[in-house]
Image 1: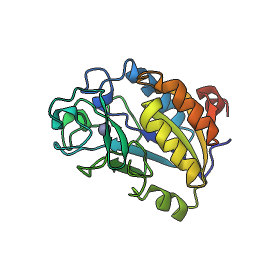
Image 2: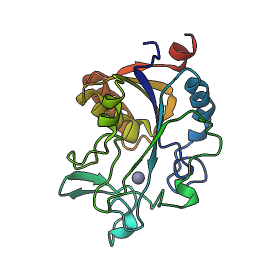
Image 3: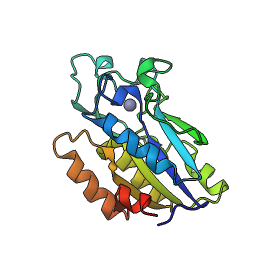
Image 4: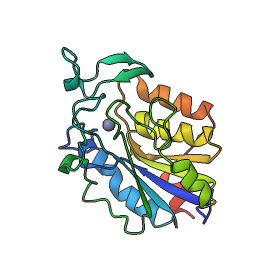
Length: 210
Ligand code: ZN
């Protein structure tokens, strides 16, 4: 599983909004950042994702009268968890966390910018039809293997990892460089789904021991 010129590190949503103090803070999520910086030193190719919503985004509870954050509703494309407003385009909440130090990163994929579609995955928006373009970018660069870290394990990391497998990439999730929301058992379910799709579950030492 050596990181080579044909592999890329995908750093998912390490933004102020998902770390302590943010609008959708994941407990202790800032603690994985030094690990991500350390892992990044082993990669030639690094891609970041950035959750990037308009104010009227469909995933915000405040845009659904009577709904509360963490309610689940059904949209045309399927179930959708409603979140507190977070990572609004151009705000400090949407900025990358200041401790993240990835000067050699090559691409930022912004996602969730269509008002009517959420996007947990870095590859496909939640309607499962709208591509972000990431698969094409990786293929054009002859990258066939991805390693995933970031926030949150059970949402954006898991969806990105499963889509990577579906698109034909070898996919590793570096578990101790992710942090979960764990809503009603969602973490255990996410691992079950990831492993069933062929995602490989590894840890920081598998990378740094190289
Ligand atoms: Zn979001």
